[in-house]
Structure formats: C-alpha cells, structure tokens
Image (cartoon, rainbow, N blue to C red):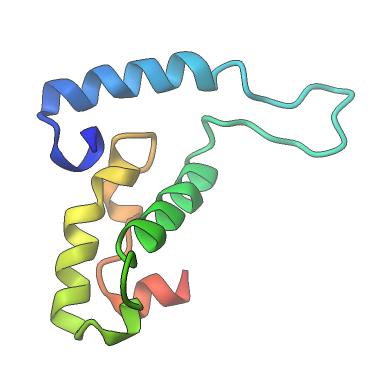
Length: 100
C-alpha cells in the first residue's frame, strides 16, 4: 500500500526499513544457492510477482485491454522503484511484461 499510495517520504522510509532487513538476507560461503535480497534483478522479479498478484483479484489480466494494462503497469512501478530497481528496468507495456 505504501509503495503504491504513499508519499515520496513514506516510500523513502519504507525503503530504508526494507533495506535494513534485506541486508541480512544473503547467502554465505556454506549456502547451496547464492542469494542477496538487495539484488535489483531479484527485486524486479518480486515486484513483477506483486504486480501480477495485486492486479488480478477477480479477473485475469488477459481481459484488460492493452491501454488499461499499460496504465496498471505504470501505476505499479513503485513496487520496483521503491526498492533497488531503476525505473528503466520496469516493463512499459504488456509485451515487455510478458517477455520478462
């Protein structure tokens, strides 16, 4: 809710709090899988999942026309940009989202 509807200040506070927790979520030399919760590529994936889930409570995104889909994507960009993902990495339309 803060990412989508909060002020710039509220998003900055949320970003600091998330980063404070994420800095501890990383693999070490004994881990079977390399992982860093501050990795922008992983955060992009999380943001894309949040978009997919939050925008389909009652109907599939497939039923939304391309213009509506683009509007939803634009409004959902803060899922990513509130974290470490640059705005240029967020998909801009249905085709780029589905390709991702």
